[in-house]
Length: 100
Ligand code: FES
Image 1 (tube, helix red, strand yellow):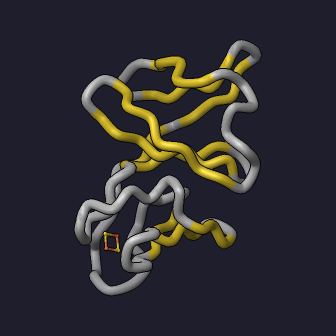
Image 2 (image 1 turned 60 degrees about the vertical axis):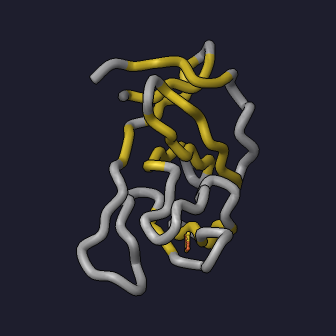
């Protein structure tokens, strides 16, 4: 694991997510009561979840509305035991960093 700078500070709006490509991974970073990172691709049919609607800790995949917890990566409906990988995210003085 290594910390990588992925964006300038304040470049992810409060209450929103953005997708980043970090090395070979696609990571969705959400700015919702702190920063949270999870794999960016929905397990259903590869939807991009970063632009999904946020409701508290839950993001809704824009394609068919499956829901994931942005803190744990856990899918909260439809299938049991599906969890997206999570990543630590830090806002530092010079930017936003993710541990990949
Ligand atoms: S691709 Fe995400 S719910 Fe279908």
